[in-house]
Image (tube, rainbow, N blue to C red; front, side, top):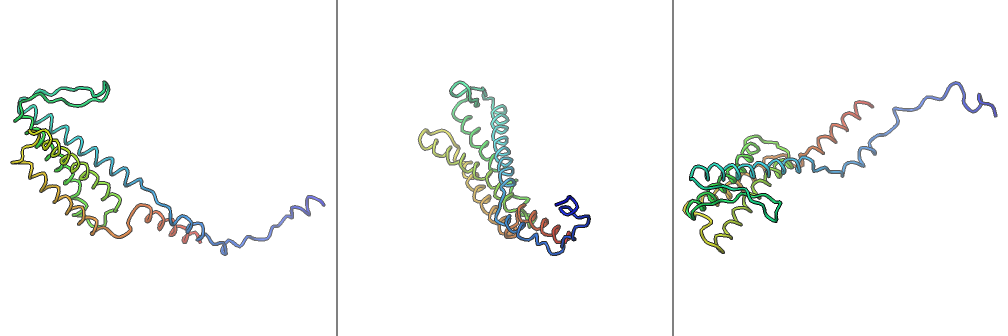
Length: 197
């Protein structure tokens, strides 16, 4: 058999109009990526942590407490507060209130702007969860070792946590069902495929 017989000069045209790309797109329908959730949660956690540290340093400095950097197990740094019990409880209470307030600020925008990505809302909710955990741990410490929280102000932290929960639920209800980057990327991919056809 000669090369001319194996490779004819003219190949029959390929029926490109009949090629169905939908199965390829459909196989990715179930794939999900949580990149938005992870990035937003990391950002929210960092925000409330910075708010807590900044409040400890500012309030401690204002009240004349001595703030030291100490190391747990010789390598994990943390702030040590040298102050009388009244000053210490004031620092802990108001820094926790500042932390919860920062988590509330993160949830205000999704409430004011409808249609937010649900993953972004849940990610911002992580900041509220971390602030709530901090408050409950400090309340537990106060129950075991008194003089950790000032309960004449600590009720405000509890009120803010309830308000944050209301904001989170409201933001989730206002977001469109199923809105996330994966769904919008998939629909854009399907639209592009349709245009190519």
